Amino acid sequence: MIGTVALAPLMLLTACSGSTENDAQDVRDAILAEAPGVEDAVVRYRTDIFTNKLSIRLSMPTVSEGDDAALLAAIDAALDQAWNASPSEPSNISIEIAPAPFAEGERIGDPGTITLNGRGFDEALGLDYDVPWDTLIAPSALLTERYGQRADA
Image: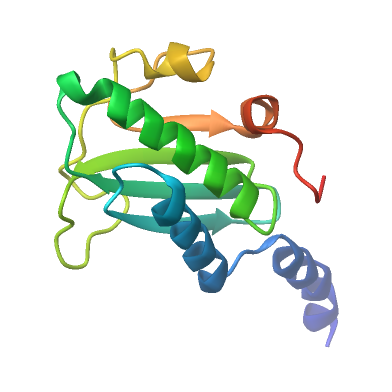
């Protein structure tokens, strides 16, 4: 009984900060409806009692350096939609991009993402650092500044 009582606050905090598969589906649907050129997306929350990280893998047909303007527009729209469609405020949103179409069972972190480093996405989006290799990570402070204060804040 004592173990159950001790775990109750932890379970309550986890439940309060958690996001569900339906939440991820809602974010995915918003991205697919509004992000230009995005053919598919995988969305996953990584939530614990301290953070609510939102990870996104976009599938796009245009991924070469000559397509950077289209990639930037898609990344910007995906961040905006994810920030505003998420039912709880993400502590950060990470985005990776893979060439379309996704392989069956494609997951976040699978090989095959394109290199985002050195392509100017960091400056264009207002990040304070260069994008590491293949994953762009936008913290909540930047998301608030760029896309506005969330209604739940």
